Image (cartoon, one colour):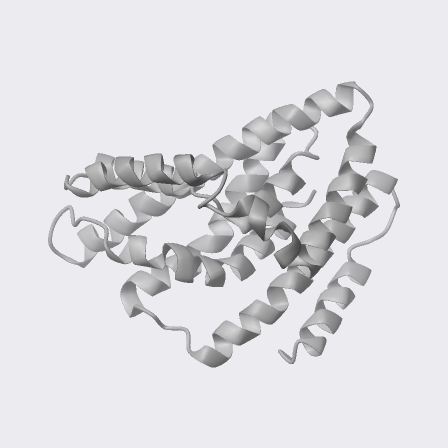
Length: 234
């Protein structure tokens, strides 16, 4: 899949990330005084997140390569596309499976303990490690991007896809550390409305990829515009 789809998904999802991961970014231990040190500190944290995303993409790309060798990648792409659309349109139907208090509770508790240890230190290594661990926290958007990465033809493409997704989250995450809670209620509600549209479009792209339909990107862009209009964003 094209890297622009990953970047777009990350950018749109970053406004959700602000609410989920913003408090962590705002509470990072300082590694020195001055604006340059502050910026490099936050960049180090975000590079840690993106590193984890790339590693996840590599693993899912490796999994996808195995499916490709078995001749199952087309069916996998279509199936994942359908699941992504269902998850985007009916999030409450899958939320129990993603509940941190349930199956993922042990992982979340372990990650929090490790992050707390790193918060007590004041070094770039600790900030980078916090980013690495943060990237492992349960997140529906990461699952969505990973589902797309699994249809990559090589592990490297999967890693690049997830890295592009992480890069898309970077602008909003940097703004929040300088401007704090900068999104008002209107923008929060607008982003909530457009996220399902982004999920459906990602699912459709997966299905188109699996069916090997030779469709140019222009109809997809038109769908994006129509979706934004329906959400009241244009």
